[in-house]
Length: 354
Image (cartoon, rainbow, N blue to C red):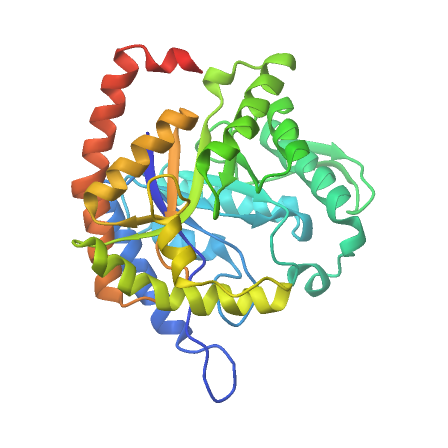
C-alpha cells in the first residue's frame, strides 16, 4: 500500500485583521516537508485547492511544480483540483508540465470541492454544481486521450480541432475522482474506469465499506476490472514519538480550524472527547505514536483492501519541527512495517477478499 501526506497549506490568521499571515514562510516550510517526505520514502504528497485566507493553496499546480524540481521519487498530486470551477485545458497543461518536470510523477485528483469560494470567483453558478463537474471531467479525459481535440459543451466554449500541449510523460496521466460519501460519485468514477479517493474524516471506517463495495461492483458491471482500479482513503491525523504528545499537539489547531469551519456551516463545535474517541482503532483519526498508526493502517486495509492512504497532518497550523518529525516517523518507522505486513497478508490470500 502507498502511504502519503496531503496538505491544504494552512496558515495562521492575523488576529487583528483576520487576514492571511506569513504566506511566504508557510510555502517555504511546506517545500521542506515535501522534500523530507521524498527523502524518507513516502509515496505521495498532495496539495488541496482552496481560495480562503486560512490556506495558501489556491494554485496547487504551481506548488507541485516547485516540489517536482526539488524531489526525486515521490508522486505529486492535487487533493483536490476543483474541476467544476476551473478550465480543464489549463488543468491538463499544468499537470502535464509538472509531469515533465518530475519525470512522470504527477497526478490529478479531480473533485467538486467541499468549499465553494471558487465558483463565484471564477464566474460559475453554484446551481450548476453537478453539471459543471460532469462536463468538465468529460473534457479533461478527452484531453488525456487526444492531442488534437474537438469538443462541444454547455458551460465552456467549444474546441474545434485544436492541439493541446505539452503532452505528459505518463500516457495517460493518472486522474483520480475524489468523493466524500456520495454514492453516485462512486458509481461515476467506476463507470469511467477511474481510481477513487474516499475522504473519511469522521465515524467508524466500517460504515464506509459498502461505499467501496459499490464502487467495485459498479466497475464490474461497466466492464472494468476492480483489481486494476486503485482506491485511496484520505483522512486527518498526526503522529509523534509518544501518543499523548501527538494528541496534545494536534487537538488545539484541529479544534480551532474545525470549529471555525463548523460555525460557517452550522455544525456543532468539536470536543476533546470526540477527538479522543476518533483516535481509537475504529475511529477516523490517524492519531498517536508509531504503533497506533501502524495498527490503524492495517485495520483500515483489512476493511477496505485499498491501495493508498493519505493523511492530512496539518488540519490547522502546527509547529514545523514536529511536522518534520511526524513525516520522518511515517516514512522510516510506520510505512516499512505496514508495507511488509500487507505483503504478507496478500501472499497468504487476503487480496482475494476483494
